[in-house]
Length: 284
Image (cartoon, rainbow, N blue to C red):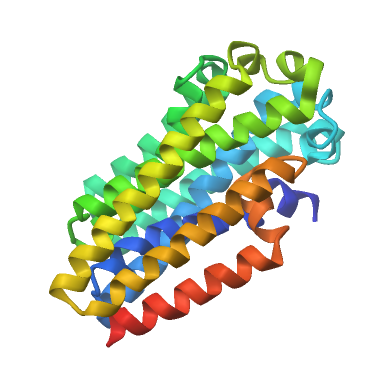
């Protein structure tokens, strides 16, 4: 059970970004669906490898955090040698699955690049202002590009810009929430928080949230002109989802996207409604 907790299976939900290329390209062929499913599995393994590596490096600092001190390595529930063995097995499994499924140097390189970028984040860059936020957001972007690579489809400009601005908003929101929740101990628990202030984070959250809605609305307008008039009506729903997420970030104790999502039934319902609406439009 502790080894499973170390993998953070709840956070595999973030790998839904691997599926975006399949959905928005409307490439619902059996081969593409299978390739995307295998891609999600490979990314789940590599993402868990990143979490294990991060927890290995962060264990001393995590013991000072009111929530993170309960992580398996920080609490002593999983021995360090066992965690290193698990880390190697996850990396090997992710690459083996990728090579077996796709035989593509590009997809394998992207998986390795994802691990190396996040390893650099865990080792050093999480303490560098702005670099930490950019790397957090890059994880969502790399997932999206990986999903496009495995089915051989390009990413639309609007999807790229919407995902970029949304991922930056979530990264800034995570830092803003940590700064508020940790108070005077913020810099001790996460060193980079000593470089941020609430005013800076609020302004950039607002900018990225605005851009997310603008870029999505422009995509919806394009789809309404080329595919059918109903796509534009998903834009107000996306605005409401963004507003609800922003509200939860301001009131939740800690603002990891997965924790915010699972902690709010209203947000889950809104996302479910969006998924049903978009599915009906894309399949029509």
